Image (cartoon, rainbow, N blue to C red):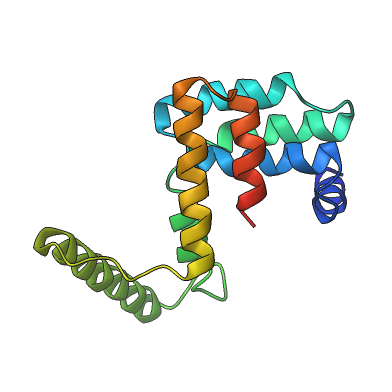
Length: 152
């Protein structure tokens, strides 16, 4: 029920409900100590309807789980519930090697790969919006709606 409502309103971002749902995407760019304030701001502006209430209940425990993305990517590497032990070991070794490379690059000061122009624009605009939020020029809700519109 929630998924069908989410898909429907996200297609048309001019709908208030679509903008509200996209605001949840912007929670990921907030510092960890501001996420709960952002969540409260979104809940206080929640559109009327059981679907949105169900979505908010679903989002509450998932917005604080930093390992969820890793687990989703890790689980996607396997085709069944019980992978072959050699496939599992190979996957873990690849993750280990990738992590070592990233850690060494950070320690050596190797710059991250450049962003494409579109991602760079979104990052700059999100940073400017966050600066306005911190200065008090915009509200938390306005920031989340704007940053959420940049997310896709």
